[in-house]
Length: 137
Length: 129
Image (cartoon, rainbow over all chains, first blue to last red; front, side, top):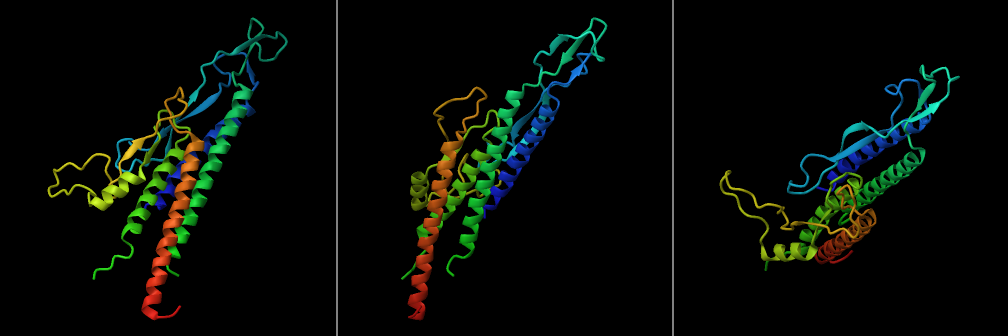
């Protein structure tokens, strides 16, 4: 029964999307965090997805989603002159994290929609399987 | 007389099962960069099944299997996206979801055809419901 494979595929996709949600939550929580050292400032993180195995070459062409890694955004940090800030460096500057709140909100919506799509897929396939089981009754 | 009551419906059910799997893979990879959406064509698969060209026989383990051919003789085709994206992903979630729903309904249709066949066979055997 190859219908069971759908559960694996959707499961890996949901896992990947939940990692994306976690990373987004971490970014949003750290948005606007400040440091006097540009190397220590929180940088926005983004998950990178890839297809499981070589799905494009395989016979059935079915592949789940794999998390390839989490990359740190290289977008420039915002420098602000705040000499009375306790974290300020000797020139009186602080660096603000490069998290874009709007981008993260969009990411969150996209992740939750994709998660819902996968749940719908599982529900439909489960119905089909149950109906197949009751064939001829 | 050789009775094959489930002949075509069995093939159709197998095809629907495969298509369900391919479409679910498309939807699952909707956010994967570089993923190319694929689909199988029912007409080709059914024609191949009727012609008996299911798959090439491998009588030696060094024989190569035919590329992109699976047990029901349907080959995977890449979908041409209506709007291309910069990350090389060709999955359009709405198109895939529509196809997935269509496929699920047709799977159910095949199931009910099979159910009807089973019912009428049982009726013929027992002479009553």
